[in-house]
Amino acid sequence: MNYKKIKNEAYNLHIINTDKYKKTVIKINFKNKNIKENIVPRRLIPTILSESNNLYKTKRLLSIKTEELYNLSGGTDVTNSGESIITSFNASFLNEKYAPGLFEDAFAFVTNIIFNPKVINDSFDDKAFKYSCECLKEEIDVFNESPRAYAITKMLEKLSPDTPLSYPPYGTKKEIDKVKNKDVYKSYVDMLNNDVVDIFIIGNIPSNVESIVKKHFKLKGKRNNTKHYIYHDKFTDKYNEYSDTKDYNQSTLLIGYKVDNLTTYERDYVMPIYTYILGGGPDSRLFKNVREKNSLCYSISCSFKPLSNLMIISSGINASSYKKALKLIKEEVSKMNKGEFDKKDIDNGKITYLSAFEEVNDSIYSTLNTYVTREYLGTDLINTKKRKIKKVTKKDILNVIPKIHPEIVYLLEGGKENEKKNI
Image: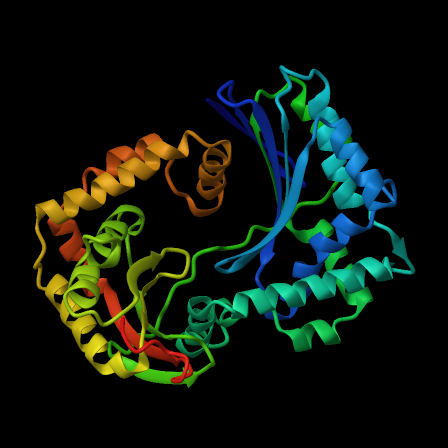
């Protein structure tokens, strides 16, 4: 696998040349600071661009074109990435060596979707705008149907108000109803003119890829990069308790911890092993002692969120089990903090992560993502990850424990009449 980064004034081109896969994948990312008022416009833009185009004026014409491109598969995505928000345009298609000339046609197709929407009087096509608004409202409904996703959003609002952590990931329906077509178009123009742009291409790539990209991707102007990681400067070091009620079939218990002053090695390798031992699977302390031995929850897990420097313990429970479940969870955290774990626990965590790393190279999308995260977050590539994860020791884990600060206990209580009587 041969990687090359080419810096241009208006974009960075990342070329990952490999014969391993039958497909080529293009990912074009537009990245800027995550501002609350801009979440809804940013979420609407990709759907509008996919629904309204000057060249492919109907969905049928668009479909015919993808068929001509050997059933090219395209898609868009918007991701809140810590302090940044990323709008992605993706395409997957047959490798150049099986269909000579396809790469340029596919790249031209993707850039046409981005740069050639229907625009009248500084507004998008009205039908596409309204359709995009309805789709976003449906996404909000689907998101809110998940007790855990909804609970985490509400917990973060209390844990870190007025920061990107507290922003609703899809915006709100009220914000959608208020947004104007012209404002979304302004946000689109701002995206083109000011976002950091990264073009990632993986596959069997033609030698003239640079000239192809320059021909079809005509952005100009220097852009200022944006941060991703969120850091904390205030710590309470106590479990502040909050609760809300919503009509779900079960209650969700969340415990949030702020993590402070980690080294890169601790962030990428030590914290994942710590959280695996505590609550990363069926062999974890929380699963064995809270779920299996005491039957106090439907599910329980612990995860570290490196972008936000948070550790979150999540459990699906009956509200009646809240006090006892919380007590047992705190006890297990306390035991971990006292070093009550051994080499076997650490080795099990390493085996799990090493197995996951092995699977990455089997997927073109996972392989591409390792280069994306390296560009934005400074993480290592797979071979380096394998080497470093093996080095984690008990001493390393004990060294990060003082950096984990308890901050919040949040209970989203389900409707009591809907909760199951037995776990």
